[in-house]
Amino acid sequence: MQGADSISFSNIPVNGKYEMMVFPNPAKSEIFVYLSGKKGSYQLTLLDMMGKPIKTLTATANQKQQVAMQQMPAGVYYLKAEYSGQCLVRKIILTK
Image (cartoon, rainbow, N blue to C red; front, side, top):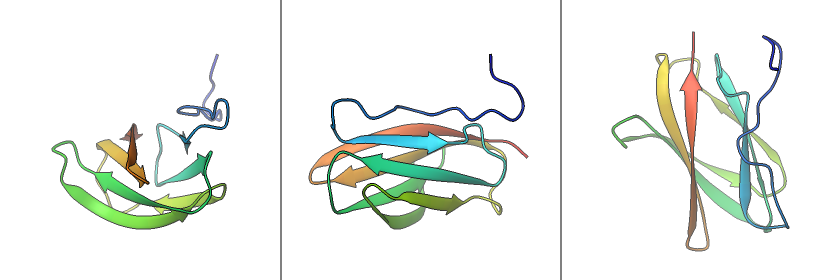
């Protein structure tokens, strides 16, 4: 059972494949993204509920990347990671 201080992970890497962990989720002001499975850089795009890009940044595989969300209103967002023709999308819930 998760408590108020627990961290939930969205997708844990399996068998060394391209995977993305996003935590905490739900988030209050920032999220951390960890991409694993391949070396190199990934493009991260934060999207609103309508699919409109809000923020784009580059992340390095196997390193934790911070994504600040303090200036965004509470709601549902999507985080898209792209690498070498592959794309992963995770739903992010932002609470205030």
